Length: 358
Ligand code: ZN
Image 1: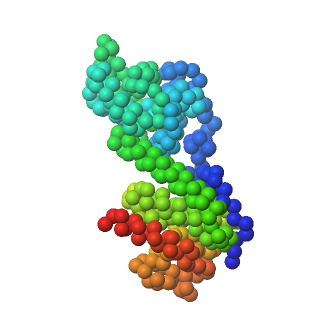
Image 2: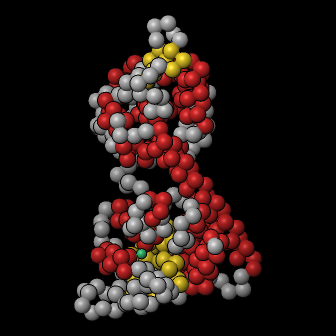
Image 3: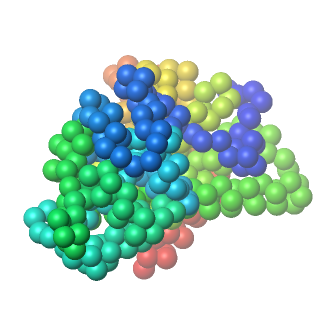
């Protein structure tokens, strides 16, 4: 079975963002709580605080996720954050506040060092300096100055952030930002490489890639490169529906501390979130390596229509190499399976990866 007119070629030239996160989130990353989206219009003041007081509490995970979204930007001005969405400004200030000791006063020089450290780490996307940041944080109550104006201490967190603030620390925040920026850079580099590769193919390839399977294995390979960039075993996957890639995923169990974070699961999770349905019955899954038993099981739960994989996996492959879960008649699922697509390329990537680690 072949899928008609794949439009994947546009991905290499002009990258479109693919769904990978919370589909309930708005384009700006925040779930629409109750329409109170633009809160602060004027300079830093207590008014900002007063207007976000009634918001729903943020979870620590929500905090890190939103901060990671902000962190992949560059040169963000505090006034821009404030005008677009006061919550972003409060989240950034609260993240800086967590860098201050909870229970002790700091003199001005020490506070400057802390804020400089924040701006070099978790606050690296901000276009500001420690002096401006300090002034804004004092004005908005995230930092308090002693009566004599010589010492500083932590201020209070707004209600919607205070519970999560109690569960987070500066190191977690800095790590989330670092990882988000690394993943972002890796994705951009992979897209650049894919684009370069597509340019070369146009001029050099004798045989055009008219086979849809070969074509869709390309973005799966790009995803595998993303995994490698994060020092994970390079396996990548994409979910295709109606001839279009709707979701991507790459292997990330180490970085996510998640034994289930195989490329196939990541891609199916993103696709199911996008479609609002765990059943992916009209979808095909392309993955660079023969799926394991866990992933094969997840595909059966998702009712994936067709599976296409690249290299065989003699150690854990559950599509014929070790066991064949798709051929098991007692399991009531009938996906069609094709293996060996771009097998050499997919396998080479893995052997290069393991060779580079020896
Ligand atoms: Zn797996």
